Amino acid sequence: MSEKTAVVTDRAPRPPASFSQGVRKGNLLQVAGQVGFDPASGVVAGTGLVEQAEQTLRNVQAVLEEGGASWTDVVMMRVYLTDTSHFAELNRVYDEWFSRVAGPHPARTTVYVGLPAGLLVEIDALAVLD
Amino acid sequence: MSEKTAVVTDRAPRPPASFSQGVRKGNLLQVAGQVGFDPASGVVAGTGLVEQAEQTLRNVQAVLEEGGASWTDVVMMRVYLTDTSHFAELNRVYDEWFSRVAGPHPARTTVYVGLPAGLLVEIDALAVLD
Amino acid sequence: MSEKTAVVTDRAPRPPASFSQGVRKGNLLQVAGQVGFDPASGVVAGTGLVEQAEQTLRNVQAVLEEGGASWTDVVMMRVYLTDTSHFAELNRVYDEWFSRVAGPHPARTTVYVGLPAGLLVEIDALAVLD
Image (tube, rainbow over all chains, first blue to last red; front, side):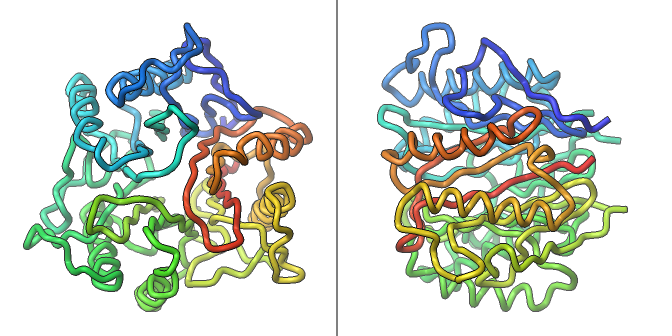
């Protein structure tokens, strides 16, 4: 019942080290921190916050779906930005994204950190399965 | 049994984007990142770490209580500060706060990040309900 | 069944404030953020990323074991570094560490933050017990 399963999908970037894109155990699905790499091309989706945030959310979604979950199951989003001036733009992408998701919005924490050169946003998600 | 519920309370600041102050699903209650805004006035509780940390903890508590939980249920606190020189002061507020909470203390991670101008501390919490 | 229990062990550093090294409630075990202090000597394991990362992982493991868990139960690792130039080195330590752990790798998020002077890495972990 609480066997641990790795989520593996070609629709999200391949991890650069020994970690899983997502893990299910018990009723939890934890999605690893996703960034704006397009898994099809292997390159960052764009140099701007909007393109990277949208790609990052698509990557999170791919892991959720592969793990048998959907946005509706997500209880927490952790959003890492690199610049406080990106907050409004991130919220526009975020609000539009969640306008298409049924049910209560996840909780969220947003903080400003360093990320590898060229990356402007990282997001991870915790889902509770039914 | 594991329906997802948003926690909504006037006793904590209104989220600036499409996320919930807290979310319950299954036996988890995740409190979104809280900062030092006083929900009554809508302004930051003070310019110093102590006032902001106390207000932040009050905001976390408001979400916990609205979600049917208490500090006793909290297993993890994530504390985000902006300056390593605030660590001792944060700990004084924190230790005094938890001296009034029965039972084992939650775990905690403290890191130093950027926050929007004027904010010195952000805290989120994960609770496991009985 | 979901009583909250603090994990206390001499094999990991003593917390500098009112928080627990780890907490169990329900089927969750949350390990607090660990850094590179050697609990035997009370000093940081070394000035380099490799020594600190290895000590940090040993500290996480001590808390997991004291809480009745193992690496196999871990679903999420949060890795905090201070410098993007440490990423490759961290991954070498990390990959070697997890090459000795059976079963699917945990998910992971890595971001770059500030830490107290002299500390290069902090790691926390969430485990789901059977």
